[in-house]
Length: 463
Image (cartoon, rainbow, N blue to C red; front, side, top):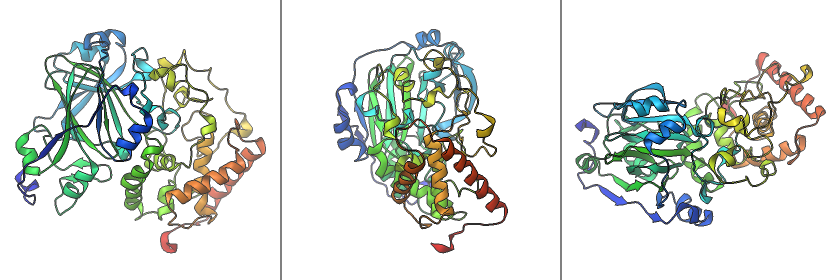
């Protein structure tokens, strides 16, 4: 560790405390989870006893699934302490004894047979219904002795869950309330790129001397097969394989109404601050202005799309459909409403998804020429289906064009306005807009682009 990173920090002992514990995740009510952990921003480990397939059995269960093997950096530098990543299959990773840690397998597509049941605290996760979120959800993690990750965060500061299927893992978690005031400020901050945090140098979460030098407060737990671990909004986390047995784990990110306040405060509003050199706050909150700027990139987790969703601008409870046949991950994901986002296998998200073939309806027919989208700025995820969520984004982007909201409007103001306006052109619970409404939407889109070409711009002088 470079001493200059710690020069301004007091020499007080670190506080590494045991993570709060609960019993089985399936028996922890969503209400208690939200009250005790999500809204307070506290991590928790939920103890279980069930064991799943072993490391070698996973290699046989989903051998051809694509993933990435990560090489550990000798000095712990790089994202999560990794030096590089190389593509491989699950079987190749299992057979390569030099491979220490691997991630990136999309479980729902390549290993849907893996038995992971969503506990109550995950069942309202918007990833099941959102058309704009990350492709590899949920994911598989594999690791051997001495493998693991160093302290790192997630893009967009989303809460994190980690289900251990085989093996044991030492998990360390640092809350945003700890790292942001201590390490993300000053002339030479240890943590940079806030609100997408990254370390400006190595940081060993398992070295007592470094933890003491940093005067850091961490939560820790040894998680074994059957346990679930939750890290709250903005938390940094590190993992290390314990013992000789390799680990198998499922993990993912999630967001729901219980995390709304913290995500808007700790990520979305911070994101807007980083964008205001180019856009007024309303422009940053809506991915630019419709008719001036860019169509959001739905192939990745675009921050502005995520924050619109977090704020409630794009939600439609009436489209969520009936309870899935089970809370097994694959059943819950592929039965999420009338048009499950995971079934958009021809979109930019899922060009190939074997797990969807037996669970999803046949692909939709191509839209008629009259309804083809010349600009491609409404069908954001490229699945050839205009959804209510996508129209909601278009409506949000129109807010500044129509001067419907002040340019410094909050996320709550924007979400309320979008829901009202969206209800006029696409009433909640209806399968689609009328032809007339769709034609009008496309006409307005064309006019807005023409206005942009004519030089009409929206800047921040009116704040």
